[in-house]
Image (cartoon, rainbow, N blue to C red; front, side, top):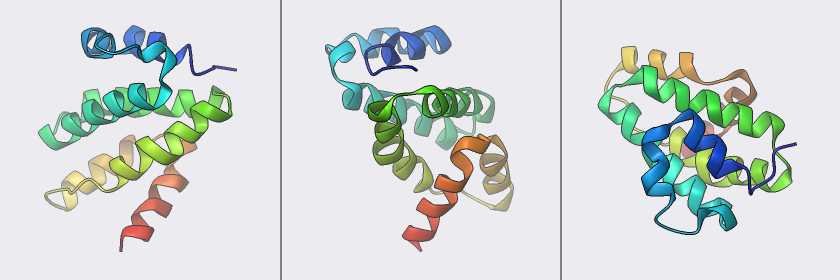
Length: 118
């Protein structure tokens, strides 16, 4: 199981561009600040239309959720998914792209969050 102390290193390994932002605070001890940084980055990629990079972020979130302990799962459920699910998309084509990159472990939660918004 992945614990909350391993999450920053996993994010840095998968997304080296987040190394500097993650080190601006003692992220190794703060799963929610780490998740907030990761969420902002993921949302920025979706907003820019960089679905390849957003897909990498979402795949990582799926791995963290699937293999994480309860604190890691909670952080994904309560911090990451509500924000990603609430992202506005420009058109149907972008919505389809976004839906296609959501990992299966998170898809049900993603849809549930979207239904809460409507």
